[in-house]
Length: 622
Image (cartoon, rainbow, N blue to C red; front, top):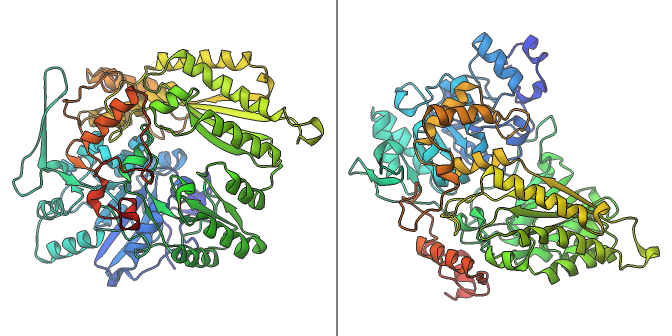
């Protein structure tokens, strides 16, 4: 029987002790005497969020299929346990074996959201691993980062030994084999990292140097080791129906954010929304085979006992076999009490038919994401959604029995003016007006429209990577203006307006496009007490601002500054397939308010064809 790292006394004093004891359903147990490599996978946020992450479930399953490797997990301790561990000098531990993370060969950290960066330092410090990579010895684990934020690694470059850029199914076996070989031959940490740097998609920051101009822009980004590549090309798994996918996902004993089976139906997106980083970095779109998905649905539901299955995709409606898959799931599992969740659907006749079958219409709401209030601005961002389509979708939903609609918009989009912002209020009202055209006796009570705005953050590898971001003051002014316009609408009592925090968004903008110097800001903010920054009750904006001030750095340099096309960007050494030439062209089309067709309508020559598959080669036509 394994011994827990925390005493009963400590477990009884912290919130949700089940976060720290492991032993969940389908947890893997291995004999440590028969293992060559110990890999700890980390999600730097609270357990309930980390347990909902599909990427870690996939890698956990993949690594543990190897007889020589044991993959375990760790999540950020919540603030109550964090304080106790520091006070009592308890090292951070893995859930499976309850052993200290410092005893592992690898610590792999997923980088999902910029506002989790201070939690990464928390995990390192509590694990007693030196925070800065340069301070680690042969006795410390190799710290590797991956995930969407790895497409601009520089604000974290000083803390990681290497970054895995791309999809995890492709190269990890090679990396683990290299590690074993290097260890067997008595190679050093640097020897291993040099070998890793020559695996496609791997970036080892210590082998690259950055210099800066007097105006603080980057003067050069060059390798300091002749054996490593100049450019790092992302890893892409092209055969999604032939690769690993968990048959027995982990099931927590406490409720996770997504307490359900997740069926990833495809990767990538054909739509080309110009603000969307995921739509660019995950190109080309690749589908999983229908039979593969049917088998996995059976296996995962049987292995977990979950009562809900969710289809995961950036745009589910674009999956070519969606109707067959959804009707199969309904026929097979609805009678067994399994709910079917369908996020990212366009609201059309098929979607409404399906949703009426799988949801309680009276209790559920429908979601639209127009993103912008005016047609002009929707064309700028290449949303490909007209007001006519939005109103028709809403009306079809209303006549089918729905009376609740959620709308998602962004404030601060490039070229936005106050007429575009007012359009958010008028579109919300127009949807409410559609409802009231239905005869009173046929309505399902009063209509409820919930309109939410987030603030636009320019991200790397999008056509908007060069644009200035609004300041916090500009965001707040726009928010106040829109709130006033919402109150002026005819159906104001039926419209609820929600908004995001401007200060948090500004910081996200710094971390999204920051360079290597920003790592010192992250470090100083963490040391001053910043942790769980994505949680509003723990976000300490003043401490972040002090860190900038102490380092004589202006956050607005990274956010509210238009970049020149010729400027060297911190992520320019990464090749994601989508070319800079294409991104520039898309930016120019945005300014000209021109729509670009989706990938199935016409190839726009983005560069993703270089990966040799997916939508670029559908039907054998190039």
